[in-house]
Amino acid sequence: MQDRYAGDIGDFGKFGLLSALEKNGFIIGINWYKVLPPSSEYRKDGSFKSADGRHRIKEKYYPCDEVLAKKLFAISESDSRSIDALENAMLLKNPIFFHDTVPVDCREQWHKKALDALTDCNLVFLDPDNGLLAKGVKEGSQKSVKYVIDRELSGYVKRGQSVVLYNHRPRKQRERYFAEMSERLNAASMGKTFMAITFPKGSVRDYFLIPANDEHSKHMKTALTDLVSGPWGQLGLCKFE
Image (cartoon, rainbow, N blue to C red):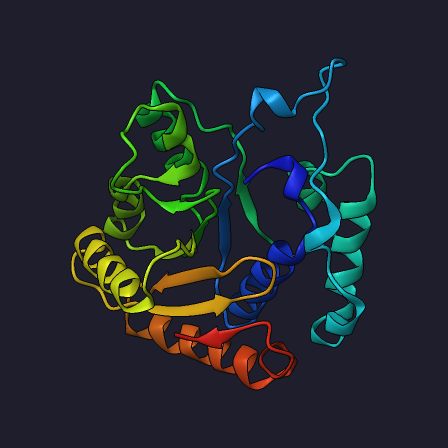
Protein backbone atom coordinates (compact mmCIF):
# COMPACT_ATOMS: atom_id res chain seq x y z
CA MET A 1 0.00 0.00 0.00
CA GLN A 2 1.20 3.50 -0.83
CA ASP A 3 0.10 6.84 0.60
CA ARG A 4 -0.70 8.21 -2.85
CA TYR A 5 -3.48 5.63 -3.42
CA ALA A 6 -5.38 6.38 -0.21
CA GLY A 7 -9.10 6.91 -0.65
CA ASP A 8 -9.53 5.42 -4.12
CA ILE A 9 -12.04 2.83 -5.35
CA GLY A 10 -9.73 0.08 -4.11
CA ASP A 11 -10.01 1.36 -0.55
CA PHE A 12 -13.78 1.57 -0.92
CA GLY A 13 -14.00 -2.15 -1.65
CA LYS A 14 -11.34 -2.96 0.93
CA PHE A 15 -13.08 -1.18 3.79
CA GLY A 16 -16.48 -2.34 2.63
CA LEU A 17 -15.24 -5.91 3.01
CA LEU A 18 -13.53 -5.27 6.35
CA SER A 19 -16.61 -3.50 7.70
CA ALA A 20 -18.77 -6.49 6.76
CA LEU A 21 -16.33 -8.80 8.54
CA GLU A 22 -16.22 -6.54 11.59
CA LYS A 23 -20.02 -6.59 11.79
CA ASN A 24 -19.79 -10.37 11.95
CA GLY A 25 -17.68 -10.35 15.08
CA PHE A 26 -14.09 -10.05 13.85
CA ILE A 27 -11.46 -7.92 15.56
CA ILE A 28 -9.61 -6.47 12.59
CA GLY A 29 -5.88 -5.96 12.35
CA ILE A 30 -4.36 -4.33 9.27
CA ASN A 31 -0.79 -4.74 8.12
CA TRP A 32 -0.54 -2.11 5.41
CA TYR A 33 2.66 -3.50 3.90
CA LYS A 34 3.49 0.16 3.40
CA VAL A 35 5.97 1.00 0.65
CA LEU A 36 7.29 4.31 -0.64
CA PRO A 37 6.67 5.50 -4.20
CA PRO A 38 9.54 5.06 -6.68
CA SER A 39 12.16 7.82 -6.52
CA SER A 40 11.02 8.98 -9.96
CA GLU A 41 7.66 9.90 -8.43
CA TYR A 42 9.14 12.43 -6.02
CA ARG A 43 9.14 16.14 -6.73
CA LYS A 44 12.16 18.35 -6.13
CA ASP A 45 10.74 19.47 -2.77
CA GLY A 46 10.70 15.89 -1.50
CA SER A 47 6.94 15.38 -1.68
CA PHE A 48 5.48 12.77 -3.99
CA LYS A 49 3.19 13.10 -6.94
CA SER A 50 -0.38 12.07 -6.23
CA ALA A 51 -1.97 9.31 -8.29
CA ASP A 52 -4.36 10.47 -10.99
CA GLY A 53 -8.14 10.51 -10.63
CA ARG A 54 -8.99 7.45 -12.71
CA HIS A 55 -9.75 5.36 -9.64
CA ARG A 56 -11.79 7.85 -7.63
CA ILE A 57 -15.09 6.61 -6.14
CA LYS A 58 -17.98 7.48 -8.43
CA GLU A 59 -21.15 8.88 -6.92
CA LYS A 60 -23.21 6.06 -8.44
CA TYR A 61 -21.55 3.69 -5.95
CA TYR A 62 -22.53 5.71 -2.88
CA PRO A 63 -25.61 3.52 -2.14
CA CYS A 64 -23.20 0.76 -1.05
CA ASP A 65 -22.03 2.85 1.91
CA GLU A 66 -22.44 6.60 1.54
CA VAL A 67 -20.65 7.51 4.77
CA LEU A 68 -17.61 5.43 3.82
CA ALA A 69 -17.59 6.73 0.25
CA LYS A 70 -17.67 10.38 1.31
CA LYS A 71 -14.90 9.92 3.88
CA LEU A 72 -12.67 8.19 1.35
CA PHE A 73 -13.40 10.68 -1.40
CA ALA A 74 -12.49 13.53 0.94
CA ILE A 75 -9.16 11.83 1.69
CA SER A 76 -8.45 11.26 -1.99
CA GLU A 77 -9.03 14.97 -2.72
CA SER A 78 -7.07 16.31 0.23
CA ASP A 79 -3.48 17.48 0.57
CA SER A 80 -2.99 14.90 3.33
CA ARG A 81 -3.77 11.85 1.22
CA SER A 82 -2.07 9.07 3.15
CA ILE A 83 -2.32 5.87 5.15
CA ASP A 84 -2.33 8.03 8.29
CA ALA A 85 -5.43 9.77 6.98
CA LEU A 86 -7.14 6.42 6.51
CA GLU A 87 -6.26 5.39 10.06
CA ASN A 88 -7.58 8.66 11.50
CA ALA A 89 -10.86 8.61 9.56
CA MET A 90 -12.56 6.04 11.85
CA LEU A 91 -13.53 3.80 8.95
CA LEU A 92 -13.81 0.80 11.30
CA LYS A 93 -14.81 0.60 14.95
CA ASN A 94 -11.75 -0.80 16.73
CA PRO A 95 -9.04 -1.73 14.23
CA ILE A 96 -5.39 -2.26 15.09
CA PHE A 97 -2.85 -1.01 12.55
CA PHE A 98 0.74 -1.84 11.69
CA HIS A 99 2.15 0.78 9.34
CA ASP A 100 5.93 0.38 9.43
CA THR A 101 7.41 0.58 5.94
CA VAL A 102 8.43 -2.79 4.48
CA PRO A 103 12.26 -2.93 4.43
CA VAL A 104 14.40 -4.51 1.76
CA ASP A 105 16.77 -5.79 4.47
CA CYS A 106 15.98 -7.10 7.96
CA ARG A 107 12.56 -8.27 6.84
CA GLU A 108 12.30 -11.02 9.46
CA GLN A 109 12.60 -8.41 12.23
CA TRP A 110 9.94 -6.31 10.52
CA HIS A 111 7.63 -9.33 10.33
CA LYS A 112 8.14 -10.19 14.01
CA LYS A 113 7.30 -6.61 14.91
CA ALA A 114 4.09 -6.87 12.86
CA LEU A 115 3.14 -10.11 14.60
CA ASP A 116 3.61 -8.46 17.99
CA ALA A 117 1.57 -5.42 17.01
CA LEU A 118 -1.35 -7.49 15.74
CA THR A 119 -1.45 -10.10 18.52
CA ASP A 120 -4.88 -9.07 19.83
CA CYS A 121 -6.72 -9.44 16.48
CA ASN A 122 -8.57 -12.57 15.43
CA LEU A 123 -8.40 -11.52 11.76
CA VAL A 124 -5.42 -9.92 10.05
CA PHE A 125 -5.70 -8.15 6.70
CA LEU A 126 -2.52 -8.14 4.60
CA ASP A 127 -2.49 -5.25 2.13
CA PRO A 128 0.57 -5.40 -0.16
CA ASP A 129 0.83 -3.42 -3.38
CA ASN A 130 0.78 -6.57 -5.50
CA GLY A 131 -0.07 -9.66 -3.45
CA LEU A 132 1.63 -12.96 -2.72
CA LEU A 133 5.28 -13.04 -3.80
CA ALA A 134 5.46 -13.61 -7.56
CA LYS A 135 7.64 -16.47 -8.77
CA GLY A 136 9.83 -14.12 -10.79
CA VAL A 137 10.61 -11.85 -7.82
CA LYS A 138 13.47 -12.73 -5.48
CA GLU A 139 13.25 -12.23 -1.73
CA GLY A 140 15.46 -9.36 -0.69
CA SER A 141 15.10 -7.55 -4.01
CA GLN A 142 13.73 -4.03 -4.23
CA LYS A 143 10.58 -5.37 -5.88
CA SER A 144 9.92 -7.83 -3.06
CA VAL A 145 8.69 -5.09 -0.71
CA LYS A 146 5.46 -4.97 -2.72
CA TYR A 147 4.62 -8.57 -1.87
CA VAL A 148 3.67 -10.83 1.03
CA ILE A 149 6.13 -13.67 1.48
CA ASP A 150 4.39 -17.01 1.97
CA ARG A 151 5.91 -17.68 5.40
CA GLU A 152 4.68 -14.29 6.63
CA LEU A 153 1.11 -15.33 5.88
CA SER A 154 1.83 -18.66 7.59
CA GLY A 155 2.98 -16.85 10.72
CA TYR A 156 -0.51 -15.50 11.37
CA VAL A 157 -2.27 -18.75 10.49
CA LYS A 158 -0.04 -20.85 12.75
CA ARG A 159 -0.99 -18.86 15.80
CA GLY A 160 -4.71 -19.21 15.14
CA GLN A 161 -5.63 -15.99 13.36
CA SER A 162 -7.80 -15.75 10.29
CA VAL A 163 -6.21 -13.96 7.35
CA VAL A 164 -7.47 -11.86 4.45
CA LEU A 165 -4.91 -11.40 1.67
CA TYR A 166 -5.14 -8.77 -1.04
CA ASN A 167 -3.85 -9.95 -4.42
CA HIS A 168 -3.74 -7.87 -7.59
CA ARG A 169 -5.03 -10.00 -10.49
CA PRO A 170 -2.16 -10.62 -12.95
CA ARG A 171 -2.56 -10.88 -16.69
CA LYS A 172 -2.96 -14.62 -16.67
CA GLN A 173 -5.68 -17.09 -17.60
CA ARG A 174 -8.22 -17.14 -14.79
CA GLU A 175 -8.19 -20.92 -14.29
CA ARG A 176 -4.40 -21.03 -14.17
CA TYR A 177 -4.23 -18.08 -11.81
CA PHE A 178 -6.66 -19.55 -9.29
CA ALA A 179 -5.05 -22.99 -9.52
CA GLU A 180 -1.65 -21.48 -8.70
CA MET A 181 -3.07 -19.37 -5.87
CA SER A 182 -4.85 -22.41 -4.46
CA GLU A 183 -1.62 -24.39 -4.38
CA ARG A 184 0.30 -21.57 -2.72
CA LEU A 185 -2.38 -20.80 -0.16
CA ASN A 186 -2.88 -24.45 0.74
CA ALA A 187 0.82 -24.74 1.48
CA ALA A 188 1.04 -21.45 3.37
CA SER A 189 -2.06 -22.15 5.47
CA MET A 190 -1.30 -25.83 6.11
CA GLY A 191 -4.26 -27.04 4.09
CA LYS A 192 -6.95 -24.74 5.46
CA THR A 193 -9.85 -24.03 3.15
CA PHE A 194 -10.22 -20.51 1.81
CA MET A 195 -12.73 -18.41 -0.06
CA ALA A 196 -12.30 -15.57 -2.53
CA ILE A 197 -14.15 -12.42 -3.50
CA THR A 198 -13.28 -10.06 -6.37
CA PHE A 199 -13.71 -6.30 -6.68
CA PRO A 200 -13.30 -5.66 -10.43
CA LYS A 201 -13.66 -1.86 -10.71
CA GLY A 202 -10.58 0.15 -11.69
CA SER A 203 -8.22 -2.81 -11.38
CA VAL A 204 -9.20 -6.40 -10.67
CA ARG A 205 -8.60 -6.90 -6.96
CA ASP A 206 -8.94 -10.32 -5.38
CA TYR A 207 -9.28 -10.97 -1.67
CA PHE A 208 -8.51 -14.44 -0.34
CA LEU A 209 -10.03 -15.23 3.06
CA ILE A 210 -8.50 -17.99 5.19
CA PRO A 211 -10.62 -18.78 8.26
CA ALA A 212 -8.85 -20.00 11.40
CA ASN A 213 -11.68 -22.37 12.32
CA ASP A 214 -15.21 -23.45 11.44
CA GLU A 215 -16.79 -20.61 13.43
CA HIS A 216 -14.72 -18.02 11.57
CA SER A 217 -15.60 -19.70 8.28
CA LYS A 218 -19.29 -19.38 9.07
CA HIS A 219 -18.99 -15.67 9.86
CA MET A 220 -16.87 -15.00 6.77
CA LYS A 221 -19.44 -16.66 4.52
CA THR A 222 -22.20 -14.56 6.06
CA ALA A 223 -20.21 -11.35 5.50
CA LEU A 224 -19.45 -12.20 1.87
CA THR A 225 -23.02 -13.25 1.14
CA ASP A 226 -24.34 -9.99 2.58
CA LEU A 227 -21.97 -7.99 0.38
CA VAL A 228 -22.67 -9.81 -2.87
CA SER A 229 -26.44 -9.93 -2.36
CA GLY A 230 -26.67 -6.25 -1.41
CA PRO A 231 -25.83 -3.00 -3.23
CA TRP A 232 -22.16 -3.93 -3.54
CA GLY A 233 -22.99 -6.92 -5.69
CA GLN A 234 -25.97 -5.35 -7.42
CA LEU A 235 -23.83 -2.41 -8.64
CA GLY A 236 -21.10 -4.74 -9.86
CA LEU A 237 -18.51 -3.81 -7.24
CA CYS A 238 -17.91 -7.37 -6.02
CA LYS A 239 -18.58 -10.99 -6.89
CA PHE A 240 -17.75 -14.47 -5.62
CA GLU A 241 -15.00 -16.45 -7.28
